[in-house]
Amino acid sequence: MSKGGTPLIKGYLPLRVVLPSRGDTFLFVKQHHASSSSSKNGESSVDHSLFICNVPFVPNVRTQVFLTALFQKFGTVEKVIVVRNPRKNPSTKFSDEDGVNNSAAVQRWKEISARSLFPEYDANDEGKFAHVHFASSSEMRSALRTMQKTLKGVEITSLELQQMQSKQDLQMDNNDDIQSDTSGDGLEKSDKKKQ
Image (cartoon, rainbow, N blue to C red):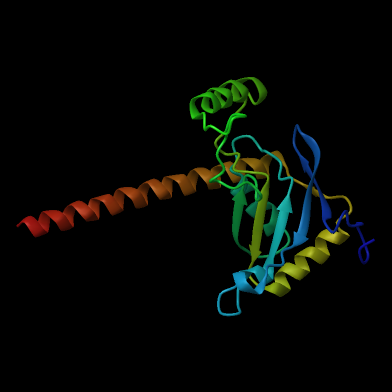
């Protein structure tokens, strides 16, 4: 059992999350430890990050936005990096039993299985695994201690989900503005060079 609270499961702290209309689910949280070879000049944000597993899919809310809002309850979050599967190699190729790459058949299988197995695909579902980077290692340790003492879990209200959606929409609008500003600047500079 961990000190003063929730027992660990294979080294992971289970964090109960209560979602409206979905009920209870659990995230599994562990302090991230990286090898020294992956850190830059001996210092890295890895010292103050948590590895998260089993992130729930929340309709209409990007996984990154959801996790940022959730972990902000425990401390100052610098950034969240979400991945679909940390063990999957993106360069892995599918082959038939003869070892011949049959990408057309694989693509067709993906299309059929996506419709039948996962009918509600949502682009906001970025993955079930993440690294949550806190502002400092002391923030991260304090967040872990607070999570260990949180036996009831964390309740996310409908209002909080609406706020997450609004924040996400605002971020998307800002990104659209930045892209249009950038493309506008590029045109003006090229027009000036022609003159």
